[in-house]
Length: 464
Image (cartoon, rainbow, N blue to C red):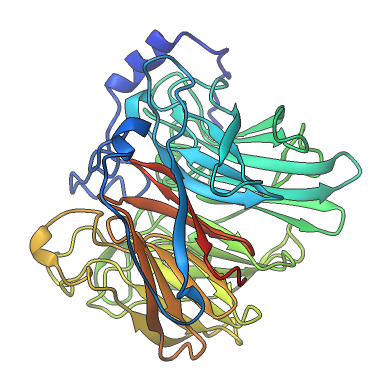
């Protein structure tokens, strides 16, 4: 297995020099040769520029009837003159954890905001920004963990290389954030070095055991099968992460033994892209849901994480681009919501459409059944060409309300009380929105806008 020695932090000038020669497409299908640039579609605004934006669009009915934007704040410059931009967002115990994307050389790390006063979020810490030069940190998950080796609040952070062939490395970092004002690095897990790294990940617990599930796009392809895209890592001792298991798609009867790790000759006669993009689990850490682009959402029983069992997967109509991007669960884990990041709306042999959401009944996990498809008003604007602006991105659920981050559409709220008939009940869209992530807490809804930073939404009537 080819590994590179982890470098000591280097100067900002050197890190930026590395990124000058890096590709500008990240976090989608980097190998599709479409030329799409997610990070370059929107301006990164300063706090002063944010004040000049127009009023946000806020529409709502039912439980989102009284939604309002309580605050909007850009992340701070942690290096003089360098404004990073945001990626995903997570919240834990009254603090928001905001990942960062690739703008201005990356290395923006994770930003921690104190949300005690949601109308005035205060950035109180940054971490993972000075560990590995030439990288970026899109995804962060924080959970309370109690193992024989660690007790407290554990953060896991994805590490991706701006240039996979540079003398850097990818994987994930682990931090003790029991005191969110003073994060402490605990450990690092490294994936095969000539891959982009870990794009998305998930932290779960099983009793006194902690696990990180990783989505490492193109690891199978670039390592020629030496490592795989989806891996399960034991972080019970976060200072010594240990890989337990990895998924080889060739174990499935519909994937041939000569599969090259990316180009899949699917049963519908098309050559489809396959790679692991995202992963999450149910609340008990019993089942994993792995978004594997055109292979669909692949479901595993991971109650024995050294020996997971393949259960089933979603699939697509022959005229649908797959693009299974991310997922979430609803109604006690019986409903799976799958979002599809389609940013090239016209491809020969496929329907003309940007990415939309699909909802499945997974009471029988060996046989997911499609219940419905939910499309927003942006999905059919195919004349806009290759763009991320019009595709759905990430899903989150609270009760029977589905929240979708949707780039230029902001956030859509959807009533899924009847998952066979989803109904849009609200939308939040700031002026010049480009929303990457959404997180739903009992007290607020958080949005991370790639150009505008952290947005906090509250309900005027105080209802939860």
